[in-house]
Image (cartoon, rainbow over all chains, first blue to last red; front, side, top):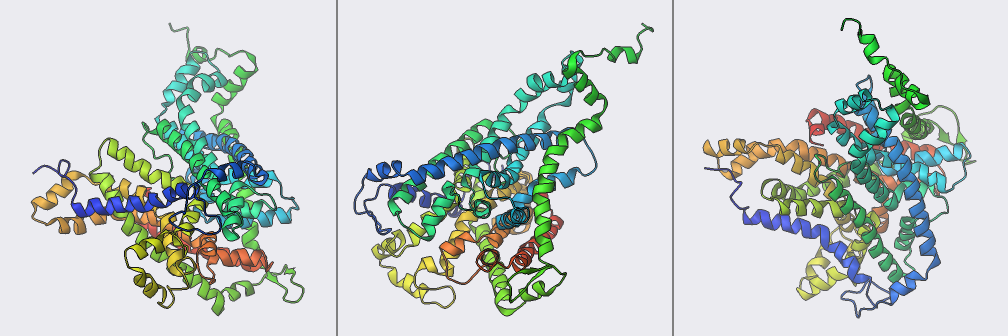
Length: 271
Length: 317
């Protein structure tokens, strides 16, 4: 008898798998429906009517724009820092063998392996001990710390496939280290870095737990949403913002998937 | 031919500053390694580990009951406070929730991972992968918000149950002690559902990876030797998939253990560890006790990771 490769799945398995995927996706689809509801005061289902007016209302809200702009700035800077640190770390770990390599991998993964609240409260008490006032930089400091790991994971997987003899050949042909990096290494790792950077951006853009500790009075978009979740004031605006956030995070994820799908690694396994 | 020694063949100096720098690094790989490693290690070592150690250090201080100021003398009294009834309750409640969430996540994730690993091919496989990745990466708060919409009294769940004439079932469930409540969004059941929803995707990919590594001929051999599909699953497939399940459970367990936003938004007023930490450092201003509370998940996860490593879960990551 041949393997189950050609056989089709048992019906119970199909139903369980499909049910599991529906469980994952239906709640998110519901967000899209609620963005158009005419109901203002409650979460009534089915919506009494559909309207586009809340998009205009949200567009004209300065607090939403401020939160969005802060989130984008924080995510951009944190991603840039994470790209630099993650790539350096990945290059060192994958191209050479040295004492303490495992420890370095552990150190990079630790900020994401321990619950976010620990990172958050540790940074906050450190800031207050060192008398550092809250600013955009305190948020960036926290975000960059846990974004390093996604860049690192993507870059390490790619570095493993880049042969060391390419670098030696380049040096033998007279290129210096910087030229080798620019013309040999960078083209080889660029899609992995792009994917890692996009995931880091998505991670930072969405982060709320560490930010509640390092942000002080500033509102990033997730903090704005958290306040609305605890004390709902403008439900329709929240609905629209939630939908936009879903769309904004989906695009980098899809892009990262297409950039790394030929590779041998799972781009998001480190979140 | 004999005139060219090895030394001459490689000693052509590169010109310019950039050339000299790269020659230097090439000849001194250890210096190069140190230069590459210094920025990430300094960042993670000073900013992250530094503040983490400072926090842990504070758990050995105590707070003065009268002045509310931190008393900087070594004491274990703060850890003693962890063991009083209220705090022990919080710890037990959180650990139980994390365990149940992990169990149910595994139950829901396994069929998805199994189908994706064994039956999905080509386009379907990519679709399954994206179908897991998109919910995994989509916004944490939006996911919680979606459940607030679903579980609200006027929301879709009540509507659906009314249409199916099953509303009595929900009422019966809510009248149960401990897991019930006024409505789903202020009950343990609600907290549990949202925890499972938010953390379950982290379970799927490790299980799928471990299932994909099971050689097909093992399954064939098992059925050739006369076992039923159920027996094959129990004695061959499941033991081989276990490291993947344990690897996935590291995420679901750890993330549930430290979360404080989900129980705050959807749940009863009884605290979880994360909320206790937040309350102690914020309104109560008791940093030593908050620090001692953070040690609990660190210790539990340390033990968990140690056990997981012994089961070979790290190879499945």
